[in-house]
Image 1 (cartoon, rainbow over the protein chains, first blue to last red):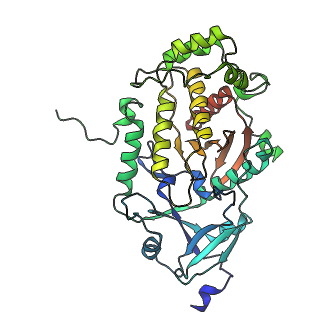
Image 2 (image 1 turned 30 degrees about the vertical axis):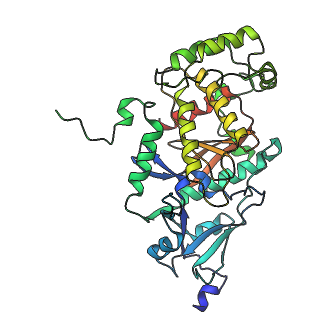
Image 3 (image 1 turned 45 degrees about the vertical axis):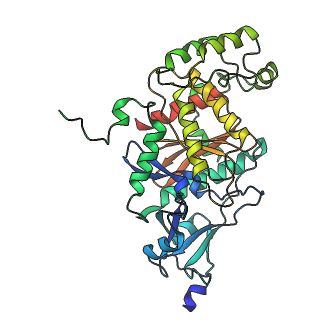
Length: 186
Length: 203
């Protein structure tokens, strides 16, 4: 356990990033769940503060199942919250991007760590051009580097697919809309 | 950065040569005609008025249809909601339903900017190919975030909580980003051009 409090993390360590429902999308072409890139942009809170890092779990001190149990996947009121998808990231690759990965264990989560050094989200005006490019560019890289590591629920794909079908009902050409549906009875 | 961007020229219809410098661009009459054919007849709900500036002051501020005759023509034509706008509205409603503690819903300014901008984009989009619908949602910071992906090309369009727009585009290779830049306050013509550029990523 003492290792878990050590701030130095080996480059070979694998990290888990939980993805929230709000960042999940249905990819028509791949016929699968995908992640929107803003899942890897530091969030600016309504009060103006910005998250200092991206939270991750170290697989060395947690299993994927344990992480899902901590993250939660379904809010008690039946509202979809929590993080039902896990993506893995390689510590060494993050360091190659100039990012820092620091352990920040808590009593509830000894595996907790943070990815530091991500560009701050840009201010919403013309002066934020370089900052916006840096933040979006890094988010694009992180999404490309991350790999699918598991679902926290059995019905994630179905939930996201249904949400997509609801949003596109009547808007897409029939071929694209019905690609995953069973063929009509003859 | 400059070198990499030179290697990835912006689509020709997004350059300053084809886009007026005083943005947002005025919508040409021909574009409104295209808007009629672009409507695939799926707009069950009418939404007259929202697709156009709501007052002369708005029109002046936005730089669109300052001529009242043009405004009237636009109102006659745009009685159906473009699929892109309908889709964005549904996705914004989804985003609101997925908010968590501490999240802010997409602000009224962001929603209005999204509706207005997408209405204009749909108005200049030709009937073929069909406009690809973006991934669309919110991180909970009051913004609306839209993302188009095709092959190696990426475009993010963010409607910030204060109504400000910014467009990011990138070309990726492997796990690297070989070219990227941000366009603050893109016009609808620029956005449509970038969407066409993304479609070319599948080639």
